[in-house]
Length: 382
Ligand SMILES: Cc1cc2nc3c(=O)[nH]c(=O)nc-3n(C[C@H](O)[C@H](O)[C@H](O)COP(=O)(O)OP(=O)(O)OC[C@H]3O[C@@H](n4cnc5c(N)ncnc54)[C@H](O)[C@@H]3O)c2cc1C
Image 1: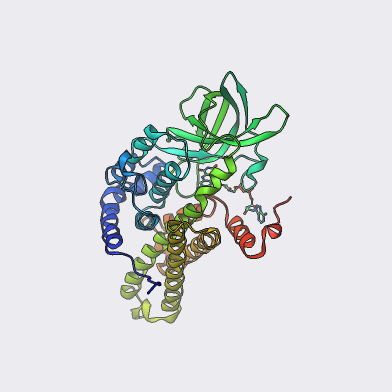
Image 2: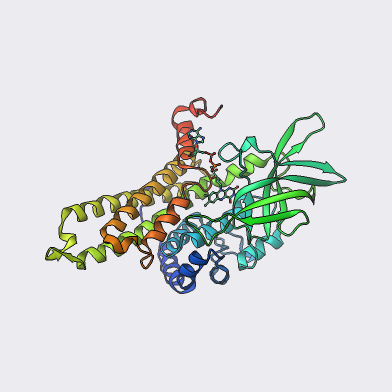
């Protein structure tokens, strides 16, 4: 009996634990952090204390040493309450554990919720096309001297350590993209908040680097390995992004189903109208299918299989289907759904933000094109 769609008893217990935790440890801060566009420091500490920032981290560092399915469950359940915290949980689990070179001190800080790590790769002319970056690092006296400007950096300001991609100049005039570990408070680093539409408490920043010096040993994954290091995490993080969106969509669907059973218009509950009940069936089906795809991707990662195709499909469909579900549910609440008093408008804004993180929806389709048709059909030659 090889095919088994059930979660284990441990996974189900863990889901029940995270669902309860998210309501108590995260929910109280969500509205205020969104309105004030402030970092959810209290929720992050609570996640650390509950072990949710070290789900896949080794036990010797204080982690749970769980599997990717557990991590998916945590992200999905936290996302029922808040997408920013779900994204923080996803990043803090995957960055220190799937990207080498942060060091044990940083890993312990992340697991406890006292320090965060982030990655700064995007630039004005290098978003999808990472290779077009302008940030450079010259080697002087055993140090990288980094100059450049990164944009759209999640958790900045806020994170303690950044993984910064830079082109390291070679003696023959060529350059190699390298991930360099840079403390956020290093001399020459400055940061400015970029106000955003959704995911407002996760904070998005511009990071400027002016003659920032760090020892040449401080690479993540070694010199010239920047792209490989970045790609190594994607097959997991893309499934988690899908579950982040799908968790929000499932909670909105659950709330909407309760609402349409009670809300009366023209003398009966609107759930009796098929123009209401049929879309709820369609969205519930798509969300269920999206979850299966995302968990399959995580399961493949757990087994060491290449999940690039499934992860690309999961992220593209999971996020776009979640946006469609939340948008239709918002409509079913009438004008109330559009107001700030209910969470629907925030959920919609937040899930829209997920369409860009770790590659846009079109870029997800390109990764699937590569798997289905072959790399030469990706059309990214410019
Ligand atoms: C909430 C949020 C969090 C983020 N977090 C981080 C972070 O932590 N670190 C970081 O470095 N960056 C981060 N980013 C940036 C993100 O990685 C980029 O937004 C993304 O890679 C796309 O780059 P871009 O926005 O510059 O769009 P561009 O690359 O300029 O693309 C513009 C449009 O063209 C489309 N497009 C591009 N190429 C093709 C093609 N070949 N075929 C079809 N369509 C194409 C894109 O899909 C997009 O719609 C974040 C962004 C957001 C919104």
